[in-house]
Image (tube, rainbow, N blue to C red; front, side, top):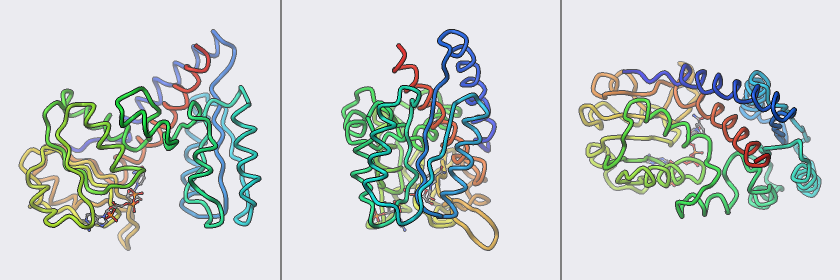
Length: 280
Ligand code: NAP
């Protein structure tokens, strides 16, 4: 089974669109999303373009605030403080990476936790790891939704996560612990990655290395979620050797068309959640 992230994301966007129509008719206001983009990084330009396009499509009032590469950190921080106070703004996102001279952590911590649609603020990170209600980072949230399309009850499943970044691996592990999975987090210093993967009911890879996960790393009937995005001469590929793994796994996500569309759909969902909380 190939997990169709594009279709599942489309379904989620449709549901959100309906909710926003209801909000507009009941509350006379719509959720708002402000995205701050610093510099000209080509990948960031594309990500932001898509985030804005899809948010507008479902009725979110979205805007991009663009700054040149050499912008002073204080100007960005002051803008975030202004957006924090603005009642029309439900969610704030600062597109990463930022230029070297801007302190990423300071930027993240300036966003109000209630408007932190990326779920990167330490309060949200802490709440997620304590099992409290929190904003959940979009990519891990998207992966969880995809997993649940295949397996409703994840309790007791042994999940091997490849990659331990704050963006993907670590929040993914926290989310899966909440689902009562047994979680192994692996990384570049893991001794025998293949044998770890061979034990997994579910493999989630977020590394950035094309075809890292081979067919013989995967247990028969395992589920494989590929977060990786790698540019190659043959186009965009994931971390998984898709042709090999698709023959063995019960279900696998393609790249493109798997996790990527879900990341954006979950950003929209987080924005709607922030709006709901602010207006309840
Ligand atoms: P990152 O911060 O660079 O983290 C990569 C992780 O992979 C690190 O923990 C690293 O280990 C581990 N790693 C590197 N080489 C390894 C190896 N040979 N074996 C096992 N582990 C290895 O990357 P990231 O931001 O999490 O992103 C990971 C990938 O996901 C990238 O391709 C990125 O483009 C993609 N991505 C996709 C989406 C989406 O929506 N689909 C969203 C975000 C990111 P150490 O900690 O030991 O260095």
